[in-house]
Image (cartoon, rainbow, N blue to C red; front, side, top):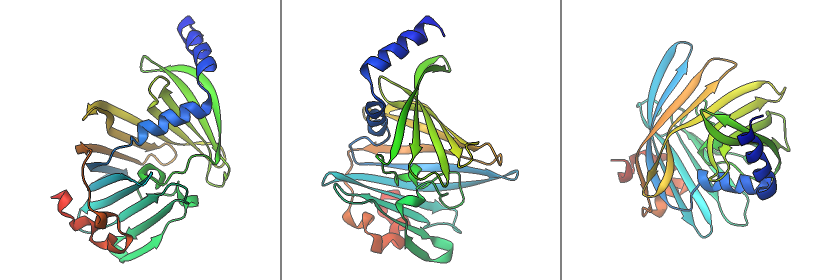
Length: 253
């Protein structure tokens, strides 16, 4: 271990508990500001790449958050959506709509790591994540692409689908650089990397996210565009009863 890494590890051990690092990570992933963005997705499987566009809106309300992700194109999946509501002091609630089937149902928090619309994105990636029911462990300092990082491991209480998740993050800011997900048998499953980070309206934001399934060779990448923070958003955009109309909101035009 280099002197720099040893010094970093000693500093982290003295100043940051795993819980504090998790709080920094959550603050980075979900800044306390309402926001909108458009996601340009490339979905790769079996040698074929499909391109989708999606809109995403998030708002902070009454101490909680509401996050909507809705597919805008192509036409055959337009309207597929996920709405997540995290109200202060209440259990997480979420609704999923599959447009081609014209079906909508509630999604349980236990499904957080299930695939969204057959992509490598999970419901947790789109807001359905409830920190607090996992064991957090500090694995130590390391470097990634020349950047000093610390590795934080989260072991879920229910390991039926995932044994553990290891996040590589910049300790000072909580900015994630890489996330490794291990399946129930503790085999490497998915690797997520956050790239092209730049301040948008003063908020550091990853504008490119890549998720690779190392077991199948499939992958999903999205680029975030038209990012805006501190925006006013209408109530009906976050109404589960109007989820079938979300793709037609004026916000995306």
